[in-house]
Image (tube, rainbow, N blue to C red; front, side):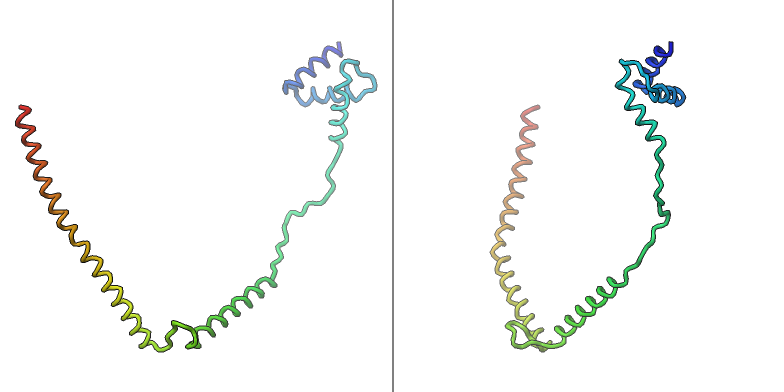
Length: 160
């Protein structure tokens, strides 16, 4: 009678339909010394569950995380910013005339930029003058539109 009950409980356990009391009965049965020979394969599993149930976690878990603010990195970043500032400030103050293409006087630089823009403008105007023939192409397409209108009217006349 007990063996049939255990077999039914095992079948329910494998299907995931047992209650906690029924699982406790299975654990109690398999913790005994004598177990039916055809159910021996379940004994290690249920004895593991009994032993695992008695295990406890004894380590302390810190509930608050301690935030340590590292001021060393802020000081490193501040020094880097200062160094870059001094470097770029120094390089903009001195005019290096020995470099090719640099002009130190603002008026002279303005005159050079004006010359360059005038040259670009003249070349641009040459390019646009060669493209003026496109307006003639536009006139030709307008004439073709008139031909399309004539064709449409003739097709309407001959269809009726």
